[in-house]
Image 1 (cartoon, helix red, strand yellow):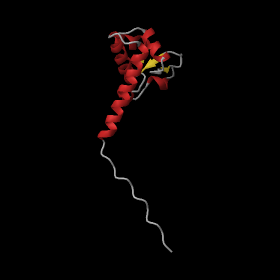
Image 2 (tube, helix red, strand yellow):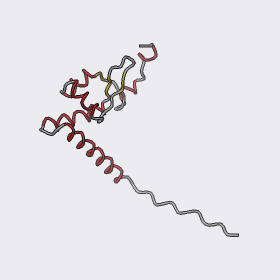
Image 3 (cartoon, one colour):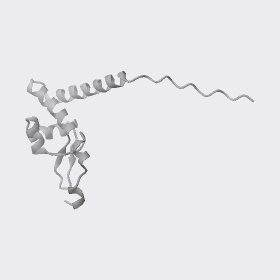
Image 4 (cartoon, one colour):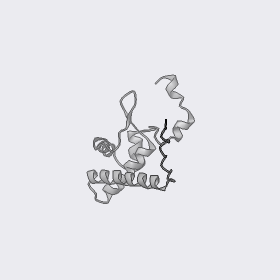
Length: 115
């Protein structure tokens, strides 16, 4: 680890996408096993960042996704189906967010030049 990498700005720890958690800690936080997190990576639902040493690191955003999949799996849903459900839920939430934004009127074309 270089001295530069030991001094991260405080805002990076507030960033939902900052890969702050090791695989073991991430698994513990969501009540799963490291194998479960590896399975989510194999399913390409989440792709953890790799440290310089090759260790997987997870962000809070990725842990929220993994936690939702774990909930569905705990309810009896197959992991591949749970991954698909989470993807669809995310797409729906994004569509709803976009739908709630004020719509901008379409720009009118510039007037045609006449000679």
